[in-house]
Length: 237
Image (cartoon, rainbow, N blue to C red; front, side, top):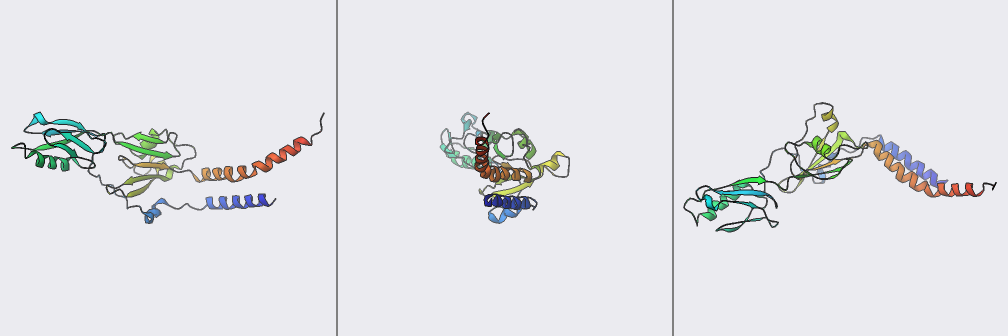
């Protein structure tokens, strides 16, 4: 009986807590989140990205290269160039300096061609969590739909978007996808590579999960034992 009382007490506490507004993710910035910024950062190359190196006055030495796993590209005459997390303009400036020892007019430009690192991560209460390809002009809603859509247990009004700055510090934004779907005043957020979308459970889904874990798991032994006794005392016919 005392075990049942403890479980009933836990259940009451759980139901009471479900009625209280959960801690808003925005309030977690003190734990290390940067203030959200929407400005578009300059693109930095990563391994697997493809780019064109064009020498304007010496086109015979132009080349299309792929960034190696160590973040390097390899060019004629000057050898290896580190491009990891560097912008096209930054790389072009180094090329002009290094080719100046070879050519009278070393003007160079760098053109991005293919970005193998254009991916996002989607997790939580979606049908197919995992790593997804980032398409042009994809927003949070499209990211969730690409992951198969919401589960019935999803909390659509508190979808969490995580993004890192160029310095590697995390930022957090909460997006009300339900309002976007319903045509409200909520604006979708354009995604960038390596963004992380997390769809939390609804309050009701959390209660159901705790009910399963606390009540079913704790009562499984006593229920099975009661069933065994009742079955054993049944008279044989």
